[in-house]
Length: 284
Ligand SMILES: Nc1ncnc2c1ncn2[C@@H]1O[C@H](COP(=O)(O)OP(=O)(O)OP(=O)(O)O)[C@@H](O)[C@H]1O
Ligand SMILES: [Mg+2]
Image (cartoon, rainbow, N blue to C red; front, side, top):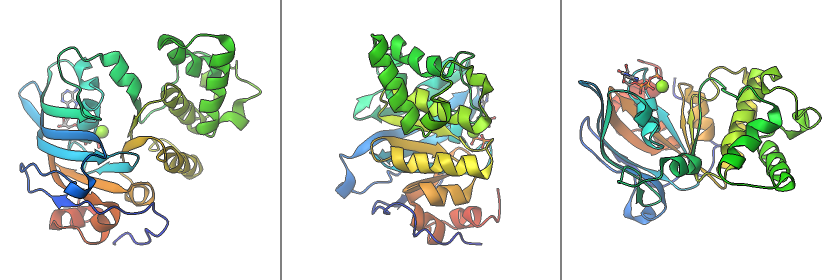
């Protein structure tokens, strides 16, 4: 099965390149250089003695959606977590190589990691709202990042909840517990919380895997909308979802970047047999 109908997908991009295992290749052409949100060069990640990511180089384009696909254990989450230094929190995890976000080396000495995580927000597979009210879930990170004034905060909370497509459903119960929301609503609340602090990049690790098709559709529409102003990297096991939401797709296998490029090309005419085999469901 080759996934067809990418006609509803956002405009496909021109950049394309391939990598054989272990060979670092950027996924951009000179034409697009300068519009990269994330630039990864020679990334290697170790958990103790185990090397989970092998010499990965890729670029994520500004204000586009990039999907990371590949079989379980191939390193998608590990790479994603390097983009906001969440791996710093994992014991025995060592990162080599360079990751730049909008040109700044995020592993450089003196990087303000809290500021980095504000600018590079993250949404996880399982919604993880704070055990606080709906309002507080969005207001709290604003206060942590120095936003003051009840009215200013209330306005930002509303704006974020509207952007996340949740406002109409919760506007009459903002002070109810976030835990009283459904799974899909909780995930949208987590997205509202992440976007409230105006990130440049949003990292989403399988954000719909615990959701039903209707909630998934809502989140996918939201991703399309948000990508007009934010760069999004989404990890997904759902090939249809990658086709629906992503401008670019990167395929990983056993810690290597096999190939990356415009989603349409990756699903219909990839450079590597392995990519075609994976996207057509022949392995993984
Ligand atoms: N905290 C950790 N400690 C030790 N090894 C880890 C840790 N996290 C991941 N790994 C290992 O690193 C490799 C890549 O894991 P990762 O979670 O990045 O894969 P993934 O592609 O996200 O998989 P999945 O699709 O199942 O989420 C795997 O071999 C995994 O066992
Ligand atoms: Mg993962």
